[in-house]
Image (tube, rainbow, N blue to C red; front, side):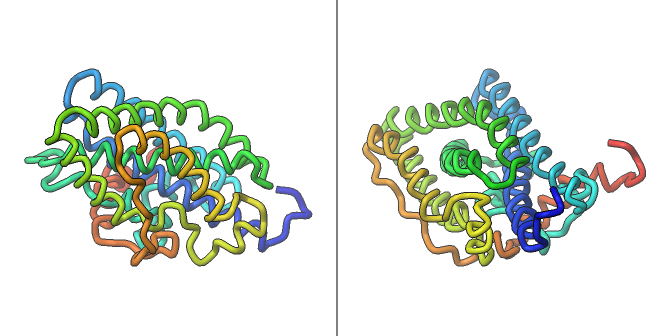
Length: 266
């Protein structure tokens, strides 16, 4: 950042970066819990690759935060309590009942629905970030965009196939989509700092990004003949650091190894 950047502008940049970083970090963690549990070996490899890419995206954002003086990137990712997190509610929700190491009872339909909604929303935001007033964010958006193209194609294919295969798979996908949408109210939100973030021209307005999202998902929903769901007003807004206990347990698991030796070089 140069000397002409105001403290208010820097604060807006930091706020937005935490939202982007925390989203991808939690999303990739939930994806990692599917390792060895996907429907077949090819999907296990593909899902693992997508998860690794997404963790890399989170790392890019946390690194920018480190450069802005917020602390060590790894510590920002793993040591902050839920009261300091800015991720959306959707990404902190568990994959299902049980624990991935013991008796996991996960719903593949829910995973596909969540990944489709999250990835298309991410696509809308990444496209908007390419015109950000903050050059490092623009550069990261361009890097992420190439990988995200394949992520979106992957989850769109799964979503379309499961919504079109049989009556049972369709009904289960509709039910899974309803569960996902319940928690997606803050996915395209910037929380109470929205006006500040958009005034700094870091990203487009929430309304503009929603229009981008609708343009992305409309062909898919039309193809499977399902009405595009309306994103609800968020009862809990993760952008305002409001979270559930699901996030606390996720942080404890994610940071277990890191916390075992804080002096180690990871």
